[in-house]
Image (cartoon, rainbow, N blue to C red; front, side, top):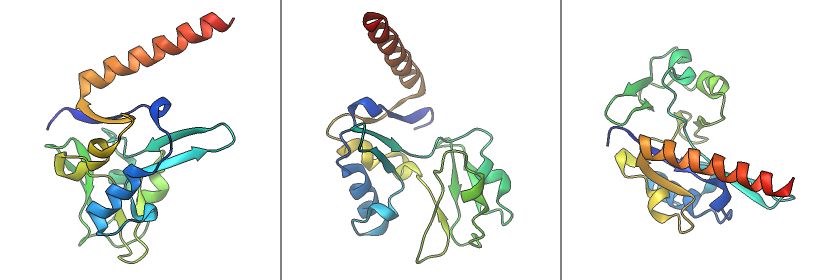
Length: 159
């Protein structure tokens, strides 16, 4: 599991919300996009969508700002995790996350975020367009290079 990341290709996302539904079902026992650990940001005017999930920052602002010590680094999964029993619900991690990945549970009154389904992320398994994949870090980097090169070549042809 170490060294694997969620690779998200927004160009393949159709905004169906399957990832949000399966995530909330697996983690909360009900289909509720509001309780999902992954969120699809929809730009309807441009007909574009982007699934957003935890960036697993090495120097995670959420972890650094957690005054209760409820957020800790899971070296096996390579990401910050939340100890819900220790969380005091201050929401400082929500404010600190530069990407808006930290969430606050409306019923449990604690922070929550993507924790990769213990190394078996269901959003990636059920993403039928291939917009979300769980891949080795090096594979994700190569895919990003390919996307960047493709965009450059596409822009070059339009000049």
